Image (cartoon, rainbow, N blue to C red):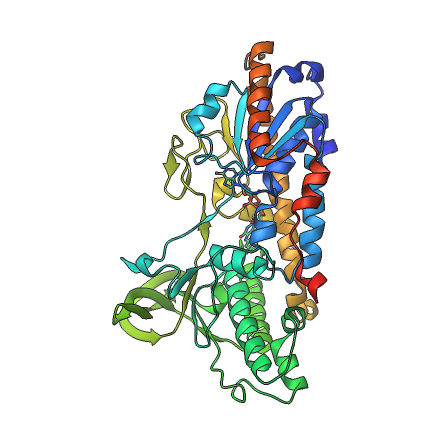
Length: 461
Ligand SMILES: Cc1cc2nc3c(=O)[nH]c(=O)nc-3n(C[C@H](O)[C@H](O)[C@H](O)COP(=O)(O)OP(=O)(O)OC[C@H]3O[C@@H](n4cnc5c(N)ncnc54)[C@H](O)[C@@H]3O)c2cc1C
């Protein structure tokens, strides 16, 4: 809880903090938590978000069947950002609408990157991205389309899910992807037979819906889609459970297998373990499949075998993870922003630039998630699917908890920075107002959210 965290800063002179302006890029789980903590300490905060709404992965990554969780988390962000010390600037993307060097020149006491992980990890097959958005779709775009396609003013890319789709992945997000493909293809096949079933019913179980109509996938002429994973079912990172002793690992592996079995039963897709994408299959200029390489797990390690097989499909979806987008002027360490040392959230090369949330790790903090995870006993394994929502919620909480820890380093740095002169403060406010005006934002956060919240599918049914 933020208020408990504030006790850590008893020695601070809260009044003085008003002489510091802090810029935060990204206003979702991590950005909103940082904004709230810092604004409660008296700092002046400017939260920029590339979106018109500051909800990040909650709006565009969490599948829309989690409507209740989405609404709860979004109201949570609203409560944090709607604070007199926070100026919100929607529709401004760092690196596109404003450059990092320019932000540094504004004179902020600190800059915080809470920009998340929005770039899909590229499939490790040379030249395959030429087929992007043709027969190849990456997960982030797929989720945006799926979550928003029912909106009358949706103007993003349009996709059609196809029977026999190949999904490459293995984490929780890839199960969301196979669910989307199955829901879409079964819903359409039922519609063609004159049976209308809404997405929320199919989310409760495709097998249940088909049974209630006395139908099978075969009756609908559907083969289903296949999830290809380079490791085994028991290795899938499907739920945050500790694995630090052989007993705990065994338990986690049993739970993972059970989660997958339940998914397979409920959503009727196929699963192919120990299959790593190796090459693309291209026929007449179109991507028509993937050549996979067989793998095995030996002593917990992945080994590639000299065995290959071809899988043909009308559509290939890659769900192998997300990494932070590059921002010019900020150095990287492989896929993520380069931080000074593993315990710090300070970006290498700067005294007052920090990264928090998914922007640091690329996918949230798994260790924190483990701390938040619960013991899973035999009888609740059966109900584990219904607990997937809880896993998402735990992830959001663990992201916020990690931010609470990072804040003390940021506060320390800002307190050692020179107070801003009135001229600099006035110039920051003037520049912020100019950007707000450009987006049409008047400063009334509640009214802005009300005007921009999209039409929800449940309200159309
Ligand atoms: C499918 C799925 C899988 C998940 N897996 C995990 C997991 O394995 N571990 C875990 O801990 N959590 C996981 N989560 C939970 C979740 O991603 C995080 O806990 C939390 O949402 C991350 O919050 P964030 O604020 O860091 O990032 P985001 O929610 O991504 O928010 C970033 C914000 O920054 C904005 N932004 C991005 N770039 C810019 C820019 N250049 N300029 C201005 N604004 C920008 C975006 O619009 C967005 O609002 C998962 C969530 C989903 C939906």
